[in-house]
Image 1: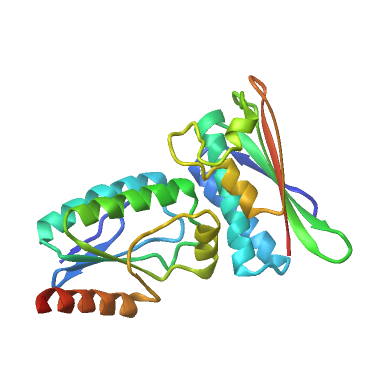
Image 2 (image 1 turned 180 degrees about the vertical axis):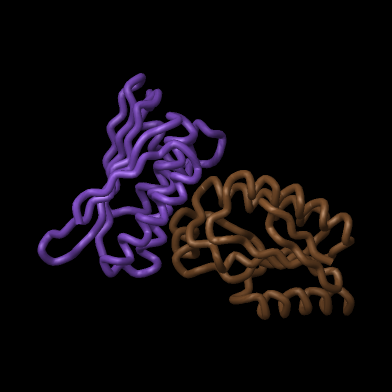
Length: 131
Length: 127
């Protein structure tokens, strides 16, 4: 499957994109638990676009290393960016007023997590999960 | 008695127990409306218990969890016994991983949920 891109601009986009991520991973043979974790992680990242950046996109890509299959989700926006990444990734921290189940939570749910953010330029988060 | 209108979660009450079932993908506005409706329905029906069926939920992210948790906490503060039912294994795994706690009695399904309500009532009347 070639990478699939989803535009994210409202809650309907969030629901559609996360449902597609869930189905795609299940389609690769993921268990219901693995797929639920992946979907939750994607949902958190996509919701951050709606909260902080207004719009952005998600790209889903199938992965294989010859032995296993997996999914990569790239979630990107051109919003305000994150001034202090270290702080944003610390448990129990979130600028939205809720406890730290955002980026730190996402990191716990996936196998690989990578984030790039530039204040004023936007944020790109890449996560990977394997069956 | 039942409450069922467009854009709202259907609720019904029988013998003082309100039953409400979540859809697969609740929106933010639906969750906000759910809070208002449930609190008012509890008051109007003088309910002593609520069984919230979460079996259709396929994902529960931070935002949704916080909203549902706050609504159930408020309902409990009205003196109502809250029971949740039907959480899927995938959601339970996410909740455990992220230390998201829903401190309410949990039933496997609706029948189990109603059993928990009945047991709670029996304990209360035997005191």
